Structure formats: C-alpha cells, structure tokens
Length: 266
Image 1 (tube, rainbow, N blue to C red):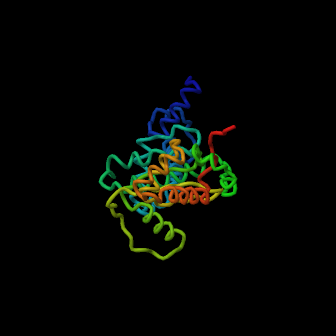
Image 2: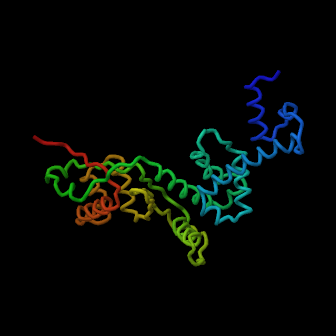
Image 3: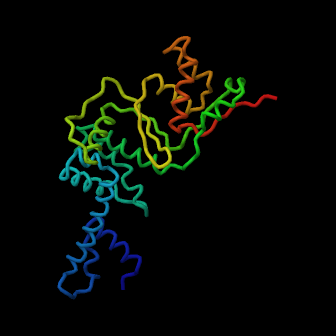
C-alpha cells in the first residue's frame, strides 16, 4: 500500500509536472476519468499562479498582451516553481527570468518587472513614522556637524536604462480608464535614477537628478550632513549646503526620513 507521504509527493508531481505516477492510485468511477480529474487539479494550479502574476504585474501584462503574457507565465512557472506557502513571493524572480531566454531581446520587459515588483516590496515594508519638519527645526546648530539619517524601509533606489517609469505611468492611466497614449519603449541616453516608496498606504515613485541620486545613496549608507554637502560641492559650489538642506526638506516632506542620529555633546 502506498504511504501518505508518497501519495503527497506523487500528487505534487502530477499537479506541477503533469507526471502520471499517481493515476493508478485514483479510483475509477463516475463520468470523469482519473486522467481528466487530475488534469482539472493541474489546470487550476497553473491558473492560480498565472492569476497571481497578473495581479503583481498588471502593466507588464498590458505591455505584452494576453497571449505573450500567458506564454511568459507558463515559462516562468516551469522555470521557477512555487517554493513558498504564500504566493506573495512567487513572482519575485520574474525580472531575472525575463533577462534570459525568449524575452532577453526586449530588456525593457525585465526593467518593467523590476519596477512593478519594487512597488510590491515597498507596500509590504514595515510601517514607521517619518520625521517631521518641526523635529528638524528643534535641532541644536551643533547637531548638524554629525547629523545622519535613517530612511524608511520601503525606500528603494534603482537605475533604469529604459523609459520604464514614463511607460508605466501611461499604461497604468490607460488601465484605469484614461485615454490611450502613443508611447513606446525607448532607451535613455544615460541610466535614470528612480526612487520608489510607500507613504501610509500609497506607493510613490520619482525620478532623480544625478546629484540627488548620489547624495541620497550616500546618505542611506550613513554619510553625515557635512559629507553630503561636500559631495554636492562638485555640482553646486558654494551653494552646496543650501542644496543639501533643500533635498533634506524634500525627503522629509515625502516621508522618506524616519530617524535623525547625531552625537550629543555635554
């Protein structure tokens, strides 16, 4: 008699790989054959995974169209079977999959997948209260000499070779009922820095100029305010401290900064 553990393994193989070892264990009877009954389970499993990818990647779906997206899903399901009890993580390697194989000739697809998945990570990040402008206003002048910033865990900074954020915005507006826009994938002259984050229950993104991207990256790695001013000096000269303060004000207004750290004297 086949053990329960072996039956479970055979059922998993039948559903995920269309293996036939389980068929002799399925009792005959009724109008549906064992083959068809097993096929129903296998189809439902694949359909549920495809629905998950459709939900996680709505703009990529629209960009490809139903048929190509269906083929993409089937290829991904075969290459990266679900390994986690929660479907939350199932699509996390889709960008990696798109960089190889049949879709590698369209690199903007992998970037679009990365862009959409970053929204998912941002939305699920821990919720931490941001620093307010009033808190910054109470700092002693001496605090600025060692001032460092802790950023919201939802914040991500990525670089894109293609016009992915603009393309995503246009398709997303269309998906929400807006007028179709004549926009196509285009490669940027230089990689574009983009931040994505969540404030309360809403996800946002914004493209950055080169100087802000460099300073933000260094600030996230622990650089203090004087160091940030020094970095901006190569872009803005004597106006660097004012520019650093301007960027800090923007980051705080967007809810990106969640803690201030500085050396206490005395």
